[in-house]
Length: 454
Ligand SMILES: Cc1cc2nc3c(=O)[nH]c(=O)nc-3n(C[C@H](O)[C@H](O)[C@H](O)COP(=O)(O)OP(=O)(O)OC[C@H]3O[C@@H](n4cnc5c(N)ncnc54)[C@H](O)[C@@H]3O)c2cc1C
Image 1 (cartoon, rainbow, N blue to C red):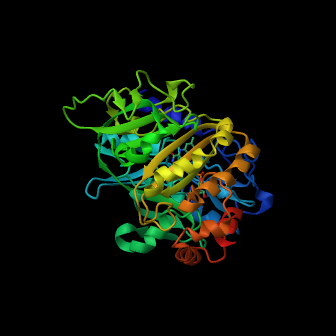
Image 2 (cartoon, helix red, strand yellow):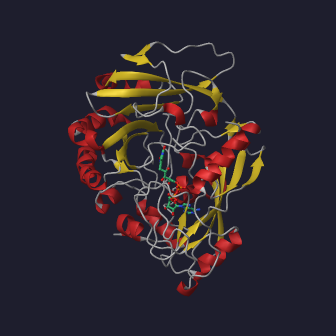
Image 3 (cartoon, rainbow, N blue to C red):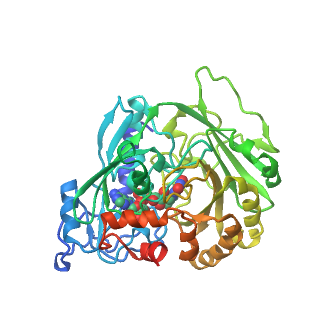
């Protein structure tokens, strides 16, 4: 697919809502999206309000924020839980989706906060630049991803928020606030993974690096036992490594290894890796699904944004009708934690599409699950069987409790707030930061009330 087709397809795939005009917060002026209340991407959640604002400029964001008593920002709605929900107002950044500047001296790109990674990756590449990492899909907004600590994989790669070098947001008073890594140091680290609590991000500046090429290969069927002594070695086999398992037969079904391609790269992949065999065709993470929507494998070199995500740009990612949950544990506990989940295999497998295991480098972001902890993330793509999944999560959380597991902020979890809160060392600092920008709780919703403040 060429770049123009890609961008057009992205717009079609994610632009399906009817836009309403910018209005005040008075209920008599309520704009009603044509399809009623919005749902999240997976369709497992219908938001609690149909009062959605669609500003096109930071001035309009300020105007709406000033008028509303309660409001939450909306990105591309890929979160699985109620983190973006509001019973009163939502403000979609869908129309604030432009690249604002590319700074070739500072090596940064500044985008409006509703811009999706896939929207500007080709532009960056054309200009000789790349992002250090991407999630499994390019369809998510920069602000939405960074608010929740969204990540890709790689022992030397921090989550996507670690690439943020400056933000601009509208606080509860309607004022525009700018924070940057260089100027605001520790406070900035509190504001990037912000759970949507400090205000509405209008601009995000990201660090960029010279463009590069990558290739990926897949190995099939590795005995899980191999992870006991070889986990670290396996994770260092590529720039980004993902392990997929359905938890059946103590087997890692697929090992995806994404490597940077250096000039004159003539290396070929070994036919075997810790008992796993090199795949001879493209594989979907869920082995029985068509590989049509996955990025090219088989060691074929391609540009960074066409190899780092698992799913091909312009195609629907993952399984579609699904649920997701994910837990972060210290990398030192990787094998024990995986084995602890393995004990539940008979309960998990019937409701699961696939589990993905990734690594994320330690960071300094207060509310990041990887704060001062290089982590392993154990992810579950579930069939959309909500009752069964919600009754399994407490069992998984109990198994991972000895490792102080933290759930992904944007995925499903059932962990008691008191336990969750005890696992965030900078939580009280974060609450102080939120109080500075939102003293009256304008951006506080039920999710935050329960998980952060209860
Ligand atoms: C198919 C699929 C694959 C996924 N793959 C990955 C993966 O590889 N790695 C991973 O870590 N996660 C993954 N996720 C989860 C996803 O990255 C997160 O849900 C992310 O937050 C989605 O971003 P969004 O733009 O959809 O934000 P939304 O879901 O719309 O919002 C998320 C949060 O961000 C806040 N927010 C959004 N915009 C702003 C703004 N402008 N200002 C302030 N706050 C804002 C919202 O209020 C909310 O709290 C996946 C999800 C799906 C559906």
